[in-house]
Length: 131
Image (cartoon, rainbow, N blue to C red; front, side, top):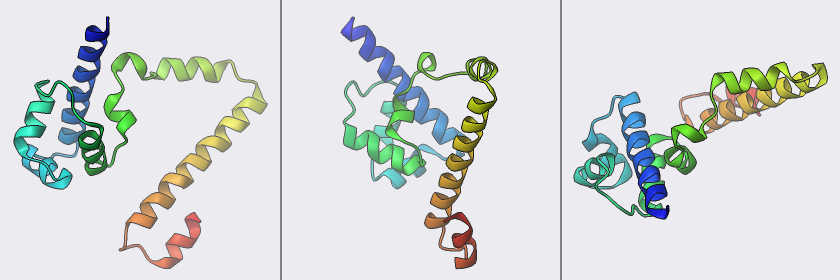
């Protein structure tokens, strides 16, 4: 069972690294450079040939991709789909929906604030809006 689980997790990591890299339209070499690794390591990882990637390596890749370690490790069966959210939404009363809207707004502001903090080209007047 443990070997089966490890194989599933390795497949998820391989698929997610490749998907995130391709979404950004990056080559293996570009991701490798950004993560401080050899392109062959990224290639082997994406092809499931790195049986035990270290957390340090996965963390560096996640950081380079602007992703989280959790996003690299999550498998299809673990990620919620739109139907799951629609079902949850339909079961909320109005107060629950208001709370969910507030949470989503706070999350959007957090994302915007993070992007503003990381982007030196955005002026201070825009940074104050997100704060």
